[in-house]
Length: 349
Image 1: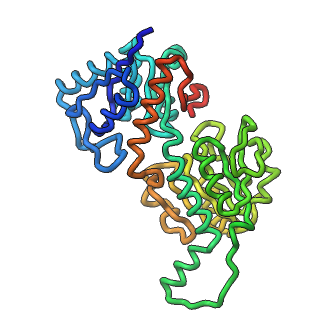
Image 2 (image 1 turned 45 degrees about the horizontal axis):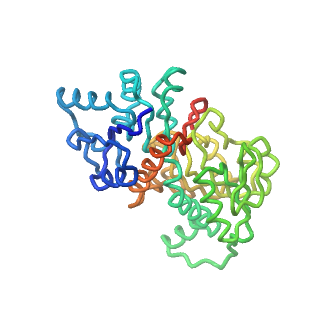
Image 3 (image 1 turned 180 degrees about the horizontal axis):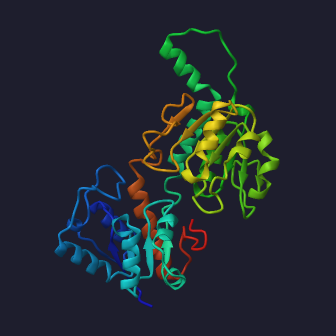
């Protein structure tokens, strides 16, 4: 096995961060042609400007470079079909790093064979977004506890109502679905605010700030204790519509729902019904079953829903943290050590 790693950059990458990757892991031979990559419209815009096109000659050059790679920094054009082509055209390819924390879904969409999934390692950028998403989750839980919709309505209508009691977070129990990198960060921030945190873990592993850990099969036994639920779960067959009518009905009346994982975890029709009936008091959603959220979705206009356009994870430092993670993983690959954030190629998370 070579003591060096040929990495071809398949996603937009700031030149300074290209230098950082090689500085952090000098055994990388980094191949990048910025002229063949789409310009970013905003930080961490790894799909790039949709108006960008390559000539036939440029596309051939782009694919030729990819076909020399032992590792790819990003999925070419964030396109599952392009990923499949790259894996099948290049038997030397050993590793693909996806920019998304939920990159497993992109790998699944490529339709690779079992042999191909076994030959190439896939990693995600899970964890680099943890603190930012945890802050949004805490914001959502706070907004629900402090009756943000009512406050905004009364301010809009210039109504000085009588006083009413607002719940304190230190009196509340929040269920965090999933104790991966994001869930652990959520638990830490909420517990620092005095929240009692219940977490779910299939392995039984807990995390700092979690007072109780339950297996997902045990959820029905704890939902009656819950004032809010924060889902950080990936989109898999096992998590699809986990939060459904029955789930929502078992929580305390007026509970808050926050989603910073994947939109498919929540049955949106069930959530709307629970909001209309007061079973759910507030929902703060950064992700949705269909994105962009369709214009005719009732979620847009619901008075107790906060719609965030899948932007809660975006921070100024995201690109640098991904580059650092990539360099760290490259060193692990070269040293024969298991890499961080390997995609489970059975459930694709």
